[in-house]
Amino acid sequence: MTSITSQTTTDKLIEATREIWKAYNDHPFVTGIGEGSLDREKFRYYIMQDFWYLKDYTKVFAIGLAKATNVDNINLFAQSIAGISAELNVHNGFMAQLDITEEELDTIQPSLDNLSYTSYMLRVAYEETEVEILAAILSCAYSYEMIAKEIMRHNPDAIHDDFYGSWIQAYGSDTYAASNQTLIESLNRLSQHYTDAQIDHLVAIFTACSRYELAFWEMSWQMQ
Ligand SMILES: Cc1ncc(CO)c(N)n1
Image 1 (cartoon, helix red, strand yellow):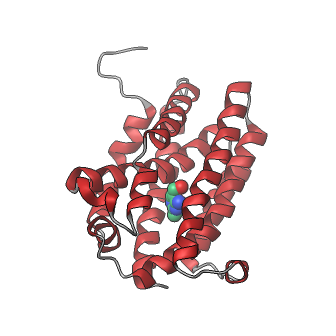
Image 2 (tube, rainbow, N blue to C red; image 1 turned 180 degrees about the vertical axis):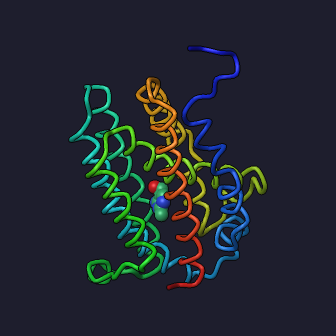
Image 3 (tube, helix red, strand yellow; image 1 turned 90 degrees about the horizontal axis):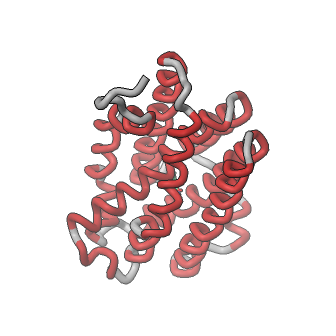
């Protein structure tokens, strides 16, 4: 059943969430990173919450790995987990600059939006298959690439910002884009045989995660 107009699964996911994804770029937290004007206290709050988030996010990949049905996907999840370690290195750089101690990290309480987001992803991970897990993950991973690229398109000098530059560089990098491309290709391949109802379910997961992403920016802006 091929037709010239057939969309890939990920095209459908992106199309369904276009408005939410547009709102990321307009959010004051995100524009503040791009302009270098974001209050560092807000960023400090974000980095600590994100550190907490990434622990659960790693577990979502790990459950995906446990459920993977072929070697390619085992490698995909394993490499993604290694990629999160690279992401944590960027966080570590900020922790030093923001005077965040190891002890402080151990005692972080997640905000309700943060806890709700990761609890949702973990539920998808525990209840569903690797395909639905990939849909949840892609919303997080790919949105950061799109945000960084939009910042770079809008203001090419943003990557040189003394403070926020490394964040923009990491998520706007070719390495990060390549890992997302692998996620996209796997999701499209694994969902090729999906019925309309199964695709609709992937859209629902991707949409929920996208709404959570927007809530995460707002939570960081409000610091609560
Ligand atoms: C909340 C959130 N979403 C996505 C990413 C990208 O991994 C991140 N670091 N944090």
